[in-house]
Image (cartoon, rainbow, N blue to C red):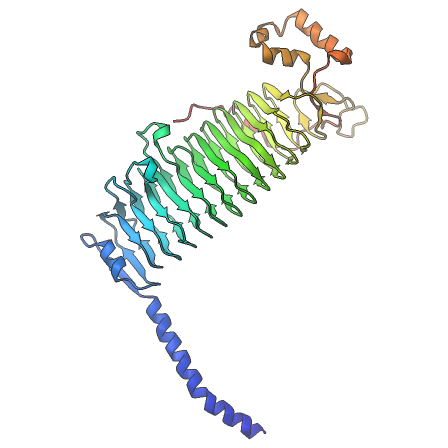
Amino acid sequence: MALLEARRTFFFLPPLLGTLACLLVAGAGLAGELTVQPGESIAAAIARAAPGDVVRVEKGYYRERLLIDKPITLKGIDRPTISGGLKGDTIRITAEDVIIEGLIVRDSGDELIDKNAGIFIKPGAHRAAVRNCDLTYNLFGIYIETVKKVEIRNNVITGKRDYKSPRRGNGIQLYNSEEAQIIGNNISFVRDGIYVDVSHHAVFRNNRIHNVRYGTHYMNSHYNVWEGNDSYHNRGGLALMMTRHQVVRNNRAWGNSDHGIMLRTIQDSVIEGNIVAGNARGFFIYDAEYNILRNNLVMDNSVGVHLWAGSYRNKAEGNDFISNRTQIKYVASRDEIWPGNYWSNYVGWDRNGDGVGDVQYEANDMVDRLSWRHPMMKLLLASPAVQTLRLVSQQFPLLRAPSIVDPTPRMKPHHTDWSQWSGRYFHHAN
């Protein structure tokens, strides 16, 4: 029996070795390299390349508009520049599994209707990757449409800085796409830093976005993660609208001329561990329900949280509200209970030393509501008459205004490093 098994192994071994040899030869053919030097054509090298090849582009200036219609890697050596000559898209990708890395890509056209971009990833170009590139003076930095599993990582993206904001495109535009990875990019001087529409199951992590209109403009997109991003010196930091099932975690939105984080028509999401400081409005929450807001630092904003338009049934706990000129601007017809937060203007006491105030905190009263409706009244806030009105409204429930109520206010902030976020005031965005 052993002899029979040995004979079977002997007879099958040569065909197996031959098959392995053919596979190795085929694999070697997929890994070819072509090198382009200054004065040569990148487009010609792409035309000659076989699927799986690497086209290496030596340092230099290449004025070309490229179409990548096969799965190859386009790799810059010492950061060569590819200029689109201010027409159309500088690089257009139509094939799956294309990788672009180490290039300076610039000078797209400026037709908004045609979505001219430094790199346009066209429908069906799944698993495209753009890494470690500089994209500058393009209308849209990277435009991504109807693809799966795209990766945009560690790029620097700047727009047409001499154009007024409405004439610029967005830094990264993601439309009708799934499972994108947008990680470690630095984006500035575009219209919106990252524009996301009808795109799901994506991760946006460790990006820096500044000097734009909205750091992110985010609509009709679900099951996404926005984590560890910095958004500053914009008109708005994060604008999350018409969305659900988001995780918005450990971001820093500061020095924005309007809001730090906008939550508009959003449900079933977790907003936690964010720092929102030095904005006109820290959080702007509109038509938001069934969300969790926890462990956020809301500090030194003109208004800490502007909450209205039926934003009920949200759970807010463990947040620190420190030195906002108005902690909460709440416009509604009933109280909303937010337990276990820290309020720097809380004037209650803690007789048993358990770290929880003995008197509940109420964010707004009738005087606040009147001053919002009649702004000139703010000139009289320190007068004895207004102070008396405030005291009377506290004593007579019929005069009481609906408010955010914290029945268990914390006596100390959860964030021990809060002071470093003082004074990060907004500047007007470009």
